[in-house]
Image (tube, rainbow, N blue to C red):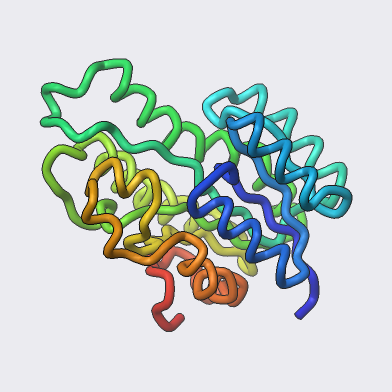
Length: 230
């Protein structure tokens, strides 16, 4: 398989870290961002030179703009852009979720995705090539108690991505993707000890990474789930 350039947000831990390791292991070039200084330093130490990682807060449009300019100057437009960075609120009825916590979930999960799209996708459109994957959730297609803010953002990602898909030129794709249920810090926040019954991020990535690499223009606008035929 020809080496691809892949941009991933939220690479510090969980699915983002597992995808990063998986893509690099298969010989692809990864440009990633995260908010953990220690994790970003570690990733650059482990995978530097061909791959590049920066500390970026996706809610900061100016910071995302500078990151995108740097990435595009290094590699040109990505073949695959994965908006993975996300937060979940602490379990609570909607009326008990503090306003600042609600705002942060909205800012990362929706505005952060829009910021990344704003600064990477024009270069992809110029080449009329590339796939944009915005991570949704099972809670972007259904709901549950005590995670209303998170559900709201993932339902928004479904709509945002499907609208984007209608705006792209032929040859490109935008896909809202449900990764499935994986034992990550985010899941443990919501499920507690029950999260142990689900696969680890690393095990998930063994299936998800090759599957993601097969996405193409035929999948534009489709709500997909990792592992299903496409």
